[in-house]
Amino acid sequence: MEKRLNEPSITIKSWIEKWKSLRDDKAIINDDNDACYWLKDTMRIPPNSSLFDWSYFDKYKMNEGLEVFIEGFHNAPTKLPLITICSFNPPGNYYKTPKSIENVFFYSKVDFSSPQKSIRYEDELKILKGINPYDSWQLILDIKSVSMSNHIQLEDCGWSILPLFNKTDRGVYVNTGTFIVFT
View 1 (cartoon, rainbow, N blue to C red):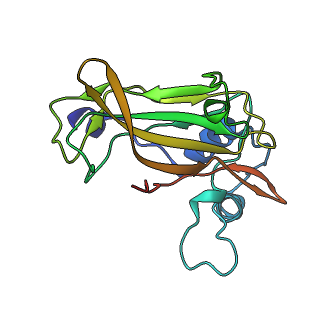
View 2: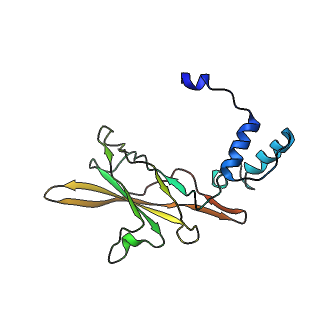
View 3: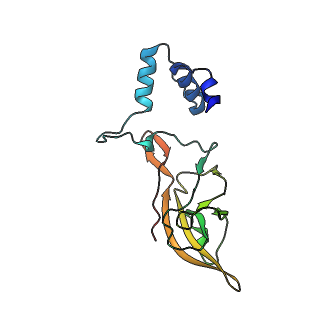
């Protein structure tokens, strides 16, 4: 906290310029009036919405990709360790016969110091690059419990669909938010 207090203040204009460079935004901002218009346009709330809609906040850039992070589960339906199998839909390679793990990744490093009902993962953030938003537009999250008697057994525990993109006439945006697992 102390480090943050000692950091130099950043002006709104310099913050906007930094944000524009990250988004490859070519808008020219000469004064505070231009900055207000830019902010209003960038942070635009869609019609018929009383709240800020984060689904129109971050335009998707294939070369930069998007980030997926599963922190864990609250009210886990089992005391066994949980893993999450993540696969793109389409094509859903993991669910085809024969199964393929191409374009599939896993969250499996369970933090065993976390409470049994609120399991956390120690896995890293996944950065997914080069996804064509018109080919792969959902991520299937398949949650399995892991038991190890004579051999490893995976049991269905829950699932969810994570919509990756929000396509509009203004472009393709990364879908953001918190998603619920069905058990």
